[in-house]
Image 1 (cartoon, rainbow, N blue to C red):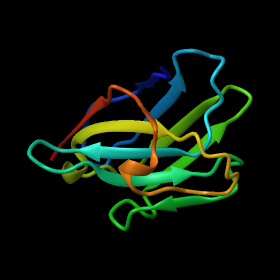
Image 2: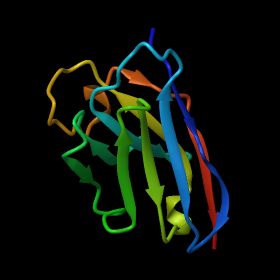
Image 3: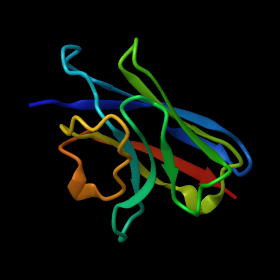
Image 4: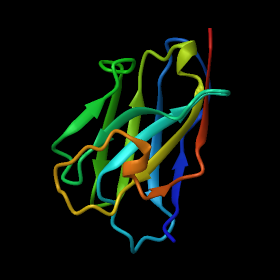
Length: 127
């Protein structure tokens, strides 16, 4: 079973930045498309951003477009989520996920399209 590991969460003030990282715990697994999702207490897990296996395509939710940037370094088998201009409503547990699909250019945006997940990292933004 592939397990992803997220890091980089924390407590920041509104307007600050954070960078999340995501990598497989077993280095032998090569991540395909990578998605970031978030879940606030009592709410559903929402799509944040996705990047294709090649890194050439990216997709964002409307709520983070222009503030967050997803990227990846395939040499390090690691994906990132750069979060700028953070707002209180960005507070949530952030999860990364990857799929087993060999589509080089896909950017899946729903949880059911992903096969492997991390345990999540807490991001708290104080206003």
